[in-house]
Image (tube, rainbow, N blue to C red; front, side):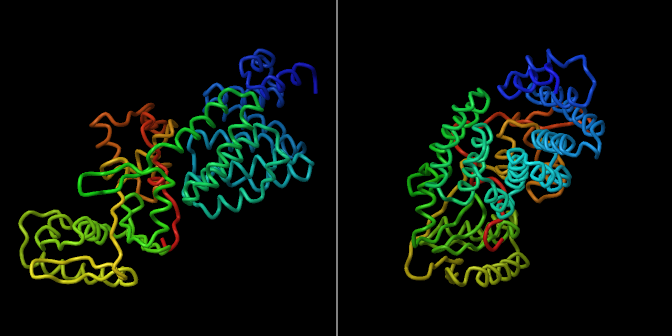
Amino acid sequence: MDALIAASARALAAGDALGALKRVALRDDPAALALRGIAMAQLGELPAARDLLRRAARAFGKRQEHEHARCVLAEAEVALAMRDLGGSLADLPQAAATLASHGDHANAMHARLVAARQFLLLGRLGDAKGMLEGVEVQRLPPALAAVADLGNAELSLRSLRSAAARAALDRALQAAYRSGISSLIAEASEARAAFDRPAARRLEVDGARDMRLEDVEALLASRALVLDACRRGLASAGEWIPLARRPILFSLARSLAQAWPADVDRNALIASAFRTRRPDETHRARLRVEIGRLRAVVRSAADIEATPRGFALKPRGAREVVVLLPPIDGEQASLLALLSDGAAWSTSALALALGASQRTVQRALAELEATARVRVIGNARARRWLAAPLADFTTVLLLPASLPGA
């Protein structure tokens, strides 16, 4: 390695992207291309960075497999930053194996972290956990240790293990300060501050009360029957009953839970579930069918009793019913939660993360753009969507996740 390449690499390790570029900006050898690509990524020029890293990988070729694998890893990290969630993981396992075979354990662990972060974005918590369990944080340099602990913290948050999340966030912040990288310190500090913000609202007689994640965890561990409007389901003493893919049943369950211990008029249930103001006999017949389906789904946690004017929710064991509301009102709450990370998302990536069709996501984005809650940059295939960070609360309960029983 010549002196300029070594100096550029040291500058990048210290977070000095401009200093690194000054040393290799006019060079087109593979090592310089790779360093230029990483520097451009640190400066936020992600499309240019990906192009440079691809050129570097092709130039190294299969004969220089160690250097080639490092370029593949860097390109995968850039793809993650661009929210290109489709095929950027395909070459990571082979790259990680190559890096480990060459004794480059730090970068092999880095490849696992990149894969874990993508799985977290997609809500595949089991896959993310498997990747993170193979990372030896104690053997990593401070910068990668901070990234690993941030990943462990997010996994714990999404799994509602607040004590483990707090410990991981504290470790991440300490490692970030040891690294001396200002952007990493800012990311860890923001993640730690977000932990203490409200995560949901509990519906009460006199309004809604803010709840932190620790409060939500305690509530879900209690004997209460919880209608979780954040993740769209019912929680009962450790049991999770998903209703996210059954919107009519969820609407009926929410109406019944919000009225508990009173009953709900049949016409009110029809209006909320079927979106009509003029119910007729066909709607009443359909309501009976849907109530029967809801009874079957929730029978382990509650009964639904018919009353002279409608229906009432009766939790088993004389428990209370609690309604947990999301911190953001509206049907697009999960979409806004994804966009609030400050990254520029494509429509296809949002659809992949939410498990919805692109057309559904496009309609939702158009509605949000009309109310100035999101903005668009670029055109055609380069179009990306942005939203302002939601600084008053954490959106962790609104992010997509593969929940038990889902």
